[in-house]
Image (tube, rainbow, N blue to C red; front, side):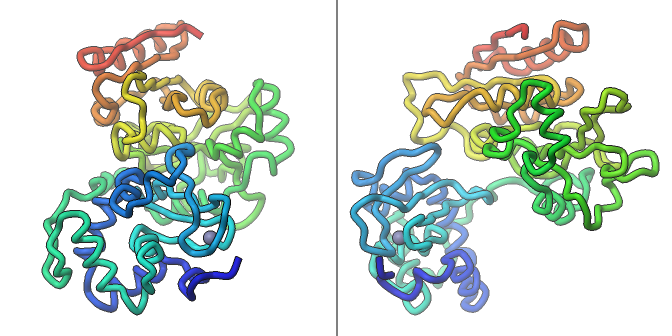
Amino acid sequence: MAPKNESARLSGRALSTTFDAGRKLPPATDTLKRLLADPATALDVLGLRDRARRQGRGFVLLCPWHEERTPSCSVTPGPDGTLRAHCFGCGGGGDVISLAAAVLGLDVRADFPRVLSELAARCGLAGDVARPLPALPPLRPAPPPSYPPADEVRDLFARCLPVCDDPALSVALLGRSLDPALIADRDLARCLPPDGPLPAWARYAGQSWRASGHRLIVPLFDSWGALVSLHARSFAADADPKGLSPAGYSSAGLVMADGFARDVLARGWPAWWNRSERLTFVIAEGVPDFLTDASVFGEWDQAPATLGVISGAWSADVAARIPDGCRVVIRTHGDPAGQRYQRQIGESLHARCHVEVAHG
Ligand SMILES: [Zn+2]
């Protein structure tokens, strides 16, 4: 499996970023990355769709970076909402520009302007990439400033570990009939690192989350599916409160979400979805129920998207990102708070979605 060219050894994302800065072409590359964010669209444009096999939210295809007989190159929506290609055989990959270069047999570095022209032409845009291409709306608006600093949130979550690495936490999860391995596999929550600094906001009543035993860290997302905050949770019987928001910041309007739900919030109906099937959203109340619901379903094609709401707070912004015509299953608690929450979600969606209430 010898690489076809040098670029296979290097990350395409890093390369095209370098070239963006060096040649002052960000408008063209940004526009193309946004136009080709959806894997199905990108593969159509590159003439690869017929030979690609659907898998999860993306596709698997024969690698354009190396010779192979069994497809091992995955093309999926990346964490920033643009397309990401990665070959499990040779390690080649990158963004849609790198993928296009490999498919066209061009060198993403040496032939960068030509790759852009070719892609732009295939997208029906002006071939001259020196001229700015039509502006598109940003992938998502900037988050409101009421959340902790984004870099600190990302840094802490990146340093958190799979929940199975924390034996005491794993035992607590198992005690709730939650499978730590599934939670880790789907990256629904992580555990605090055992040492190292924590941001100033990761504390409650003068104690750090580590000291107070709030070691389960659940990522919270905005209505566009972007990571903007973290929620810390303790499973100790005497923990009060059991769940903590970052000190000094609000978690209002933020939701827990599995990968599929984040994807739909970011981009709407998946292009690959079989439209004869309804897209289902499950909305769970509280951390344990969210983790339960989001662990139940596998990677099968028509699995529901799972959202979780803490303390019954629901936001009109999140409701607005749930596509028309979805089936929405509200998994509420039977208490008065659960009923209020049920009413709030139902009122925000019943006009354009099929809303059901499931008492769990
Ligand atoms: Zn490969």
